[in-house]
Length: 88
Image (cartoon, rainbow, N blue to C red):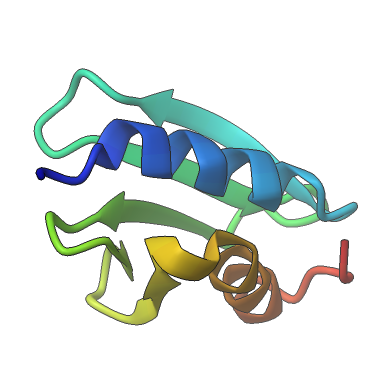
């Protein structure tokens, strides 16, 4: 069975959006690759683009592995930490 990476990114965006200091800028599910852009609400420079691999790993634009689709909440929390955001 193939992993639905679009659904994984939707879930990631939802969990990231629960963090008070994070804002989901873009959820591009029809692009290749699909991605979600998240930024710190209080900084124009603290932002990151996240993709989901076919194996279910969430990756930043610079290749950092945030976590997997098995624990989306923790992966989003790791991004929040990297973007200096408060916990959900």
